[in-house]
Image 1 (spheres, rainbow, N blue to C red):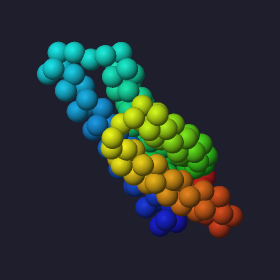
Image 2 (cartoon, helix red, strand yellow):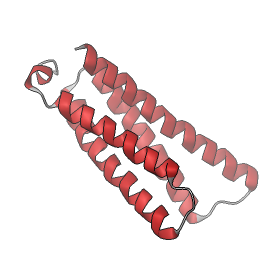
Image 3 (cartoon, rainbow, N blue to C red):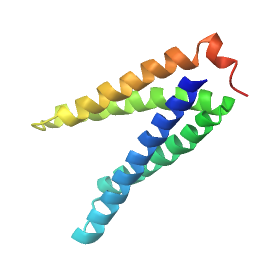
Image 4 (tube, helix red, strand yellow):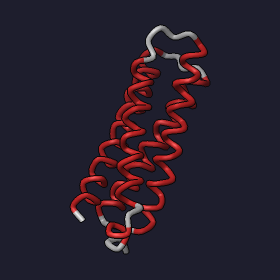
Length: 128
């Protein structure tokens, strides 16, 4: 049960980092006075990911069945999204793709741990 709650806290922190990043982007756009449409969509995506991950993390801490299923779907989509962003950065010719590659690696690690722990029969019995 401890691993479920620990994973829930990690997911909450993951979501909060997205929310914090979106707030920084919003403030940066307001201070600079300009934001492209792409920038607005990225801010919206970060807000959505942050909100969803934070809510799911709270559900994992409370050991809710819906949160287990939702997190497995969400983390899979996040890995795909980060791989797609890395591909676009590479194709676009950005010099430094280290940050995007790091996002793929970290999200993939969280996904592997999540799938290994949350799909085992011994862990599934703790969810209500």
